[in-house]
Length: 156
Figure (tube, rainbow, N blue to C red):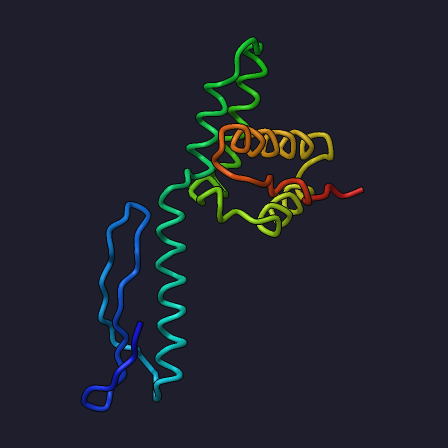
């Protein structure tokens, strides 16, 4: 981890250890930095972003998790399975491509609020239940540690 100046521009250089034990070496122009302190802050943010990307590679998307959840359902009536699939198709249209570790309570709360404006309470409760069930499946299978739906509230 170091910052250096060359030709009036600041650069950062260093190594980041990856999960597989190998190292990623970098030398990068610290855009917009006018001093060593700013370059070091730029490097700290670069490392954090790199590590977030590495972590998110290991996680499934909500769509992938919902497919696994549907495959895990046994002893469920066909009509129930079809209802769940219809709900998950709508949900995946909104948040299906997001990595499950990056889906927050705020994202889910905003989504539930938008559903409450468009649909009846009973229908929104079905969405709430299925999203919660998918995340619980993720917890049971060690994809995530905490269900972000735990703090999402339905309107009274």
